[in-house]
Image 1 (cartoon, rainbow, N blue to C red):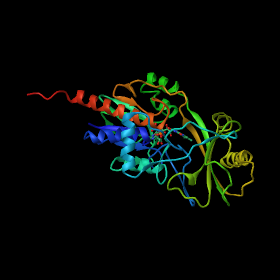
Image 2: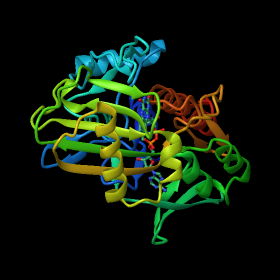
Image 3: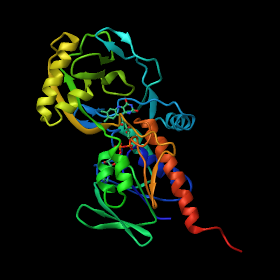
Image 4: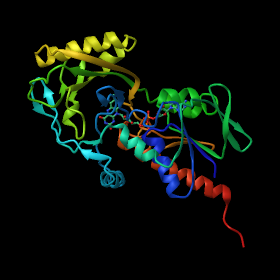
Length: 331
Ligand SMILES: Cc1cc2nc3c(=O)[nH]c(=O)nc-3n(C[C@H](O)[C@H](O)[C@H](O)COP(=O)(O)OP(=O)(O)OC[C@H]3O[C@@H](n4cnc5c(N)ncnc54)[C@H](O)[C@@H]3O)c2cc1C
């Protein structure tokens, strides 16, 4: 069974793992420099800084079992903090918050271990050629012919890839718009004297602040804070330069903590497609058109857990499509 997976984020790697467990070796393509998608850490001279997903939760039984495996493998640990709603300092919802160690990207590296992943490859076309799907990169080069393709790109990117081969699925992707997010790592000269490790500011341009060193196995010297702008601020200012957004959000952080910390460095990242706030909550866990499937957080619940479950559901469907194609053994 020849299966291509587009996207080596949590959904794509979850599907790849499930297929491999069933004896099928998919080929995975990702346009990024490494696997992980939105579960990434920016490599800097201060160590890895988590600028994407900050933590994830595990509610569903199957996902909890996967998390238990990752904990046994030493790639996931609980992050034992209670974020505060700021400036009121009300504790946020109590729940187990999980992080990969020693940085978020470690989880994707672990999941990608042994998988045939080709990074730095952007798929730009999928064409139905008789009973195959042929996929092409952005230079027009054919990457291969496959029995089935699983597309796990964020909804807006999936939408443009789906426009030709499946206007119906493209319309579903269009119905799951994604919010942008400006994320900034602020490196301080001296530790900040505040009474919280992480928080959700209740007003202003920041929606999230967290001290990197409060997470397990992160560097603590120099002290680094991760700041996320709110959906509204990010959307209004997504075309700002990294410098301008970094400076403005670092200043907003100073105002929030009512101190003027000496800032050694700032690392800003623009996420054009960060969160699927209006995810489809598709009951099957995937979308399907003629051996072309879509999975990802936007098909499920907009979170890491949903992306993982969506990948698992898509893998089960791909296996059953393969079994239908092969047909029952005769004689
Ligand atoms: C700033 C931020 C904060 C977040 N906070 C949380 C949180 O607190 N809790 C939580 O649960 N979730 C959070 N999330 C969301 C979480 O990161 C996602 O739900 C999850 O990682 C989505 O995984 P995915 O595999 O569906 O998509 P992705 O991780 O986006 O993976 C898709 C992959 O497809 C690749 N791709 C796209 N187009 C192509 C193409 N044409 N060719 C080849 N490859 C392609 C991309 O490079 C990417 O690697 C956050 C996300 C961000 C950005």
